[in-house]
Amino acid sequence: MKFLDPKNDIMFKKIFGNQQKPSIVMSFLNAILQLPEGEKIEEVFFRDPQNVPDNLEQKKSTIDVQCRDQKHREFIIEMQSDYQSFFGERSLYYSAKAVGRALKKKGLYQSLMPVIFVGVLDFTLFDKNEEPDCISEHRILNIKTLKNRIDKLKFVFIELPKFKKTIDQLETVSEKWIYFLQNAEDCTQVPQELKTTKEIEEAFKLLNEGSMTTDELQEYEVILDARRCEESEKYDAFVEGEARGKAEGKAEGEAKAKLELAKRLLAKKMSIDEIAELTGLSVEAIRKL
Image (cartoon, rainbow, N blue to C red; front, side, top):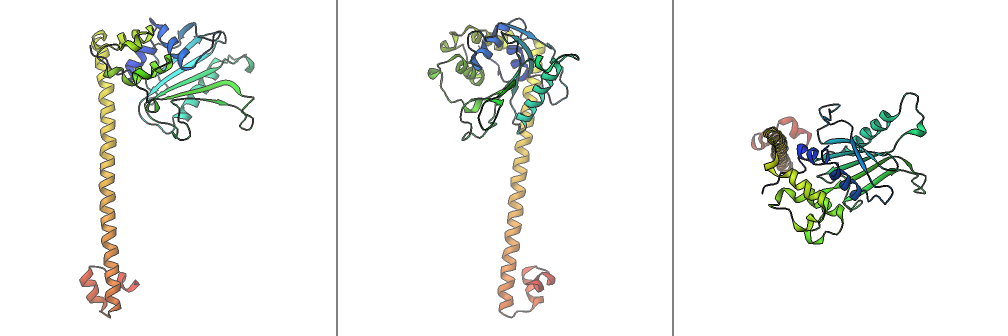
């Protein structure tokens, strides 16, 4: 059995934005956010099934869902594979728009519903020495007392590279979901350790290449090819920059060596013209010495 990469935009949307299988995203959010009894998500409403982006930078991996619990909170889930140093600011922008969108013309600010942004990142956003955990939660609060927080916005980031547990070390449902996102593509069958969570088993079924339509497979390959091209361009730019740096360093070293030689020859009272001919330096450069 061949499973596709759940971090690919189309597969991430197929799993967590699936209107026919809302229990999957409910299981994921309840586990990741560790929602207690009384606050667990019971219903999911996908606000925009087509997820038309505001701009080209907003990929199809952004899922705008409204999850009904006792607090009627709204969730935004995004999978981001490519490194973005500004991802935190971008998350704030999306979340603030969601908050503003929920306020009706004659509505009161007190009626604003909370928005929780969940970012699944295939890169490290925060310094691992400062934020060593795979999952980090961010809120607006008083930095001195760490109290009096404003609960209308909450940000949860899942940095996949920071998760190092092997399959036999998994203890919680959230760890199983993270392991699934990291390793599903490399599996040839559903691991027994993950079958205990039926929603993860359902997610594996959606990842099965045999369950994909021709159009879905084509879009999957287009996204995969675009990512490969982007990585290749980054690599080419790195190699070119490294080569340029070496060339510039070599030229700088040669110029420095010529100047040192010119200084020694001047100390031996050799004429400027002779030194210029010997070193290749200009007469003006030697006179400055």
